Length: 331
Image 1 (tube, rainbow, N blue to C red):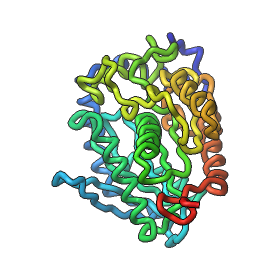
Image 2: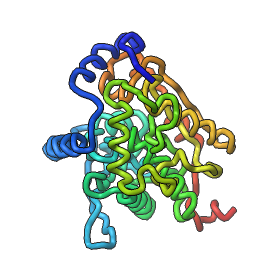
Image 3: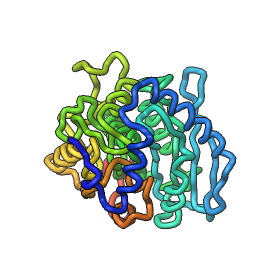
Image 4: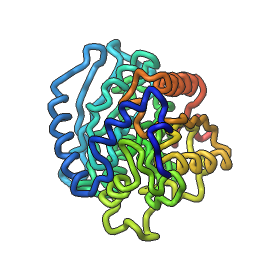
């Protein structure tokens, strides 16, 4: 899918043109270099603590002698019955840290009162699949087990993320459903990275800003390594491969109309709906990947943010999922 400048939303066009001039069609080597650069910048950001949030760090034992860093962002006033939102950052699985989404945490805390649990999951440059998924699952179980300590409702645990974080969100809800150890009330995978095959119209020969088909293939190769290009890719690595989406939690998502993830997100949404899962979904025309993050003041970005927050507030009033073994779950 070839993307011209004229196809872009007018308020996104200047940034889109600039992104293209900065570079595209990134190789695995260039992604590794970008990951190292961004990682250094984000470690510096750890020293910045927002005044409008309580921030706590915890370490979870992975069972192999290493620990998973988890950052918890809470409203300033102590909570006793907030929703717990496991937030999985984006970055193509090869870069990123929880600190990059500070602005999102502030909005969530201020407008919904959620407690955000953000794991610093392992990245594909050093730890390919399934490291990130297992870290996310460990953080989800930890959030459940520490709900009272964190001021979280045990029956309202949710999962959300953007891009690769959206892909991890979809994978994690599949894994949680299949293991049966923890129940998720709802999920919010925003423009999720779901399909390694890149066989849809929007994923083939897409040259959109920020994320094009070549860069996407490089990211998948880093994440999947020897699995890439084979039929052995598990559904927990690429959720678009899942044939059975029954029993997954209520879902909200949106995607840009110009990005590689458009068609695979549409297929995922249609699969959920065919299985009776409540879904709210939007395609934003003229938008490339990450448009709302990079041009947050654009009218379409504001609409997208309002939609996700409106749905989230409604989900908080509507969806609960008692944990396995509780009286309500047995009933």
